Length: 183
Image 1: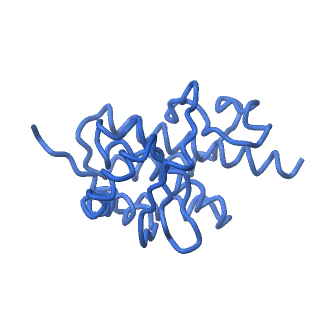
Image 2 (image 1 turned 120 degrees about the vertical axis):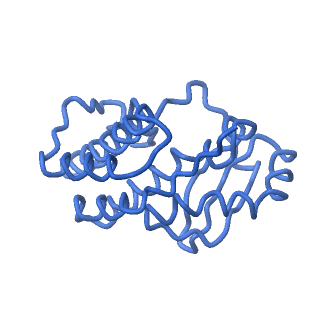
């Protein structure tokens, strides 16, 4: 089986930084994008039984695990996971100093959303009203995102389109949240 690395993502983080001037929004978008690739990083075996939760101020990626056995097994593969994560963190300008696995923070969600189609879950009540079709982006922003995604080498056109859609929806969601906070 051909192994696919997304090391061609070199300038995605730069595009996000140039489009979004608010540092908190930049960080949120970049973290959200990293979290989307979690399944590619850990593989199918761990994709549904682990979930990246946050990145703390020490640069530690906090990962919720379904049970203590999963936590123990991932600790064994921690170095490999960090190596697989490097192309993503580099392209998104995110510094991960360590990974912390914990089964104590696991919370089973009834309907885990497909983040490429909808907004990320949030405790913010406004998130339930999010409709990406109602948020418009500047044409220059869209052109920069499209250009950046097209310049990168992905495994297939379908993956490139999925990445483009995810970036656009994330940016729309971040703009929605910033508009909601102002109201």
